[in-house]
Every structure is written in C-alpha cells, then in structure tokens.
Length: 319
Ligand code: CP
Image (cartoon, rainbow, N blue to C red; front, side):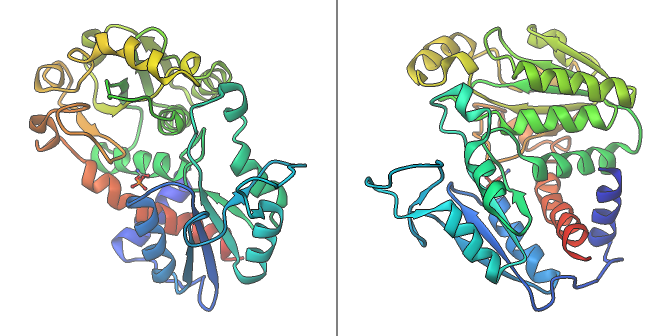
C-alpha cells in the first residue's frame, strides 16, 4: 500500500508522466451510479494514454446474469461468462462497480457479482466498489491521511452516522482494513447492532497486530471523539437487517440526533481532520459547519482517487 501511495504522490506532483496505457483500452462497468469513481477512472485512463470503455448493464449494455447455472428465461439477456470474455478481447482490464443489494447478508458477503467477473475473466478485474469492499477509496483515504498528517501512526476514528436508509458496508470495511494495514490506532464507533462482519474484524485485528496498530470498538459517540486526529464518517446498514430495511430504519431512528458529526464533537478531538468518501448528506451525516470548515479534507480526498487509481493502473498494466 505504501508503494502505491508513493507512486500516486509522484503522479500528483507531476513527477511521473509515463503512458503505460498508450494504445490500450480499459472497460469500466457500472451497475450503480457514480461521480468520483467514474470520472476519476476515465480521466486517469486518459492521462495514462489509454481509452475508457464505459458500460452500464441494463442501460448502455444488455442486462447481465451472474449466477452459475441460471436458466435465463426472465429479464437477463447476457451472462457474465460471455460479457467479460468478449470485453477481454478488446480491453486490457475491466473495472466493475456492483453495490450490495442489502437483501441477503450471507450471500452478499461473498461478493457474488465481483467474484463472477473475476472467475470468468482472462484480464485483471479492478474493484470499483463491490458489495463488501471499496479498495480504491481506502487507498485514497490512506494517501490523504499521510498527506495531511505525515507518516506514522495516527489516532483514527471511523464513526457510523445516522442516514435515512441503510447503506452498504464496503467503505467502512475497506477503510478499517487499510487503516489497520497502515498501523493506525483505529477506533470504530457505532451503535449496538451495526457491527462490521466478524471475519472482516478478525482480519482487521490481525493486520493491526502485524503493523503495530491498535483496534477498539466504541458505542459511546462522545467518548469515541476524544483525542482523535482523523474523523472518518460513514453510515452503513446492520447485517441482521439485510432483507428488512424497515426494521433497520425504525431501529436507527433513535440515533438520529446523536450520531451526526458536529462542531461539539469535533471540539473533543485533537484538531482532527474530517473525512468522508462522498457523496454526503449535509446536516444528516455531518453539519455544514464541519464540512465547510478548514478541518474538512473531503475534496482533497476525492482528488486523491485520481492519483491512486493511476498508480494502481500503472502498476497492474505496465508489465
Ligand atoms: N466515493 C465514491 O466512490 O464516489 P462515487 O460513488 O461518486 O463514485
């Protein structure tokens, strides 16, 4: 991860101008909406000398089936098995965005769409946010922390925030894993019932132990902010509520006024920077006062998506 951040830094500073994608194309497949991922990937591929082929299954390309052995008599026109192998004849890599449907936790935690792409593809698959992970975002987040606060272990808070509806866990999962890999002192704050996946937390703890970091889980939001150098806000849905969004919505209602990042909570930190992957709902996840303050680094964080993705593409496709 550190090497990729170093390369991203060279791209950002204009000290690396190689064009490893000259004359080559990369496919970008979006099952869900996007601003940052789509724009930064398209721009990054262009800046590396390549061409982006952007497809939206069910919109600008055929509806896609990913299940093995499916009898395709319903609404799906093409199978991932053909889709990715055909794209692989035109493109040197395929990026894919496929959110969790929040219907079936046990099935979705296996990342079925991303896995089907990886299984069928003869070219590298890049995860542009799947049901379970958002690695490009996490890499940009780690670059941003290093850029703003310098090298070394930081006291990082990942805090759940109230949102009117349940959202996927990809961003908090990847952020927690990346922060652990970087050896940060990470506190994950959330109300009871919004625990991250047990297996993922096991890996987060293993990575933290290997990198010399520490992991804590906190249910008291005021306590969680004390002394933090980084505040990373994100809302996510509870695993036990997958398939029952109305139960999640009624459970989280009690947290609406407490679980928001505001000026009072930020005052408890050690001059923390405020981070969010965006898009963010103003005065729901975070107040205008915090988002528009000098401590907010969300725009630089979004910019860093471009630089880290160029580093990933260059590393993956240069040889
Ligand atoms: N953070 C992020 O992935 O943004 P988009 O959903 O706009 O791509």
